[in-house]
Image (cartoon, rainbow, N blue to C red; front, side, top):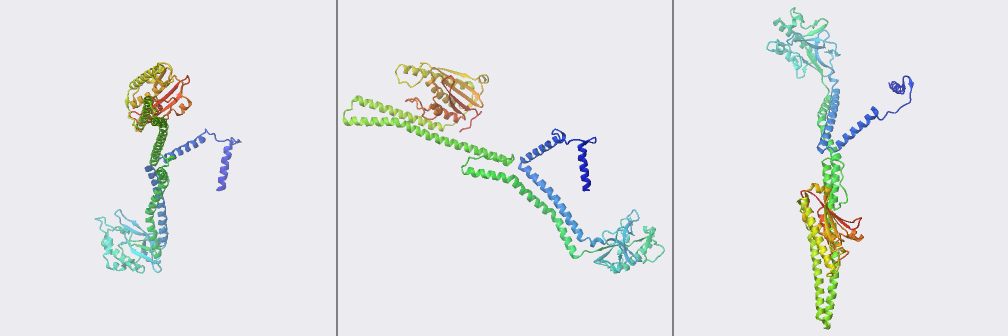
Length: 600
């Protein structure tokens, strides 16, 4: 067969290599052909099924595992139960080789195989010899070991002869009333050696019954009227027939019965054992494949978070319940990391603020100390004139006032850190009008200050040269059409606008421009001036506290720092740059979280 298969396969290859009897070159399957397209499509479906199974919910995956393992348990229990049932039959097969209905043959003094034959429609039956089932006659003189013989009338599955009128068991009742027959039957049936005597007496009783019932259905098969010898067997053609039948069988040995009981018990136990084992295996695999990886990831993440180690990410490659829990852990970790970075920045800002404050306090304190020492020296020498005392007192008062302003500035910064953002729905025009009022007012004040400086009434502290600073507010084309409602803290926006416009007005040559726009979820306020622009140091450190390139008694370098802090509190930022055509530009962004911005 193997050789034939090889020839057939070889012939198939030759058939593929020839066309019309002529050999052709082997050609690869075209990728776009039917077979080339089927494999990628099939692999794609398999990949999609795997992905769906991978991201299935825990409930679905658990049910899938249980279904597969329960089917496996059903198959395994059925197979093993069948094996043990077959073994049970095997150990008792020898005993049941001799089993079935028999009738007694007086000629051979043996029990011959028989079967029951229905002789009418009312259920009356007759025992007829048979030789087609492979059973051998059982000699009475030399029967098989452990042979048991029972009367067919008393055996549960024996035939019954009924009258058809009320279901009365006429023949069985007639034979059962015989005390002589009952004397032959013991607990284990009829002794083999007593079968001839039992059969002769039973036939005699049957003849008596037949004589009393001349219309019985047996008269067509048995000669019940000629008074023949009841001890001889009756024949119907070549076959022996008899109204008396026996059920004979051999009994299994003790060892065979013990093994049969054992295999029967195992057959019964296979179902609960296999189902229990497969349920345990399904639960174990479900835990190992679906729960353990997620629990391990979450446990490791919780341990790192407890150790305040947030420099990691929680990743779980499934979209089930544990995957969503891992995503929540990652969101929590990200939030904690952001809070930690914010606290670190706050601490660093506080350190820099304290250092800057301490540095700037050193100058007025040094001046105070020098003035006090000089005043003490003059007083001790006794040469202090009233003019000197007045000048020293005025200088001391000026430095004390400067210290008070420093303290007030520091107090304002401390309050700024604790300030909460309270956004509300604000019309665009209201915000724009407030920015324009602030710009015009501050630029007008700056122009007045410059006029005073140019008149020589105060020392110059600004870069502007002209006496007037113009202000103009522009709005983007889209906002001019849509006029969107803004979810912002208006007071915070106005305070940032004051600082940016005020700073620009101090350095502008003659013009300050502001522009409002809404881009990418942010309210954008850009303030420009036509002054000299930011220096490299200002571009780098302009938002730091107490940074100023033109320090004065009225300006401590906190305007841009306060603006940056307020923008950050509102979810935005502050950017400094120089314009290409000259001048500086400060761009503030405020997050629009409508209807409310989360407090930070």
